[in-house]
Length: 214
Image (cartoon, rainbow, N blue to C red; front, side, top):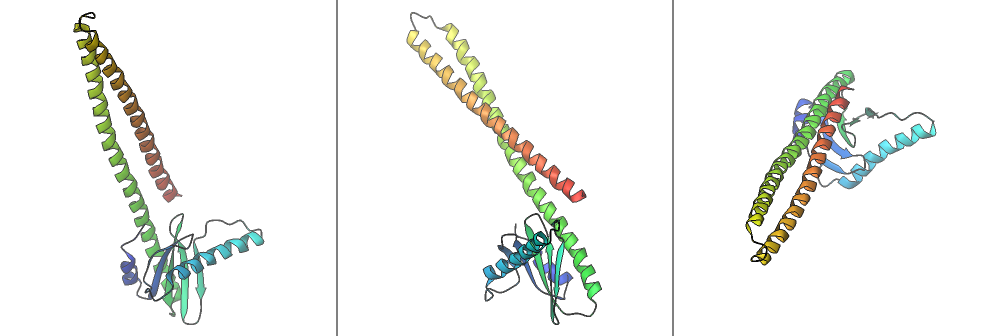
């Protein structure tokens, strides 16, 4: 997911020199660093830093709870890595300032806003998918209804034929009914699959909301 608010972060936190948004596998999906920087290597090392901490916990037999933030400070720069989503993270590169506590408070506040935006974006995408599937479901249901009505019409016509005189037409109509009934069966399967997908998506939204409350 690509965020459009990376410049808003810099505006809200003028002390931030650079921002890197990356996945757990090291893939960077947005950054303020120029292409002159080895971007893939940057993402690889950021993800590696988190992996090293996880390994450290394992070696020490500590339970590795989902991390919240990692802070590394030097004389001139500070780097704070924070967890965004289940698979995403953000690294903020700060220039050294005296009022460290004030800076961290601002970071926490804005990161909270970012997490809210992430949840909203995720739910919005799922809702759009649900609406698309529901629209397709309506079309399939309408098509199924038409075919069922067509079958009833074919059956009514079938009764009008005199078997001996119009046996060929009668057989053709029977074959058409069989083929149309198969089409109905295929449509019913598609409809059931769409219903299952929609229920899964609704469950996903519910889980996102519940995780936000934890």
